[in-house]
Image (cartoon, rainbow, N blue to C red; front, side):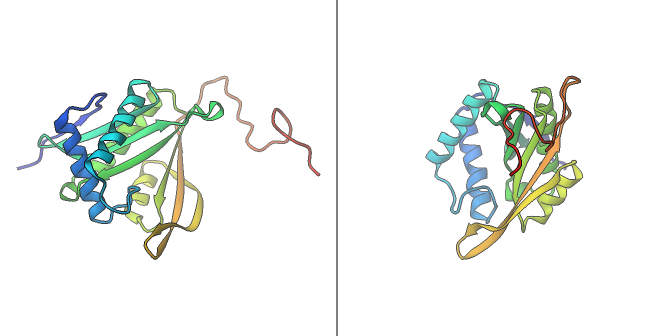
Length: 195
């Protein structure tokens, strides 16, 4: 029987959601997932992270997407607006993951597609993300959804004695009609003359 999949955008978390999100982060980290933890996070660590993300969501500076599989959290991901004034039109995608038992259901694509749509509606012009260089499946998914690699720091992600590339990717979501793209042209505010 096919699984029932639902997508939620929580702004508050009850005890069940906290426990379910902890289960996903814990089990993904325990299976070696590249989600920013060297060892599985404690419940207290996840609750503090989740509360901070949901606070940012209520402030309009982030959005957390949660995919339920048969009413259990199967995957999560979020976008978070960059808070520096000159980067406020940009956001980072963070913590995209599917529980090991929910892999193969298309949840990664569901979550990232939903985050792209949500960020665009929030006025975000550019989405960026980082992915571990050995995570070829995630890189392929991001490329299929339009992300392009813009940079790579070789061997800077440390996992024990192993080192991996930090692959940086971005997606242009579009801009207003009055926005002028100047790229790297010389002159204008903040520039200095060539030596």
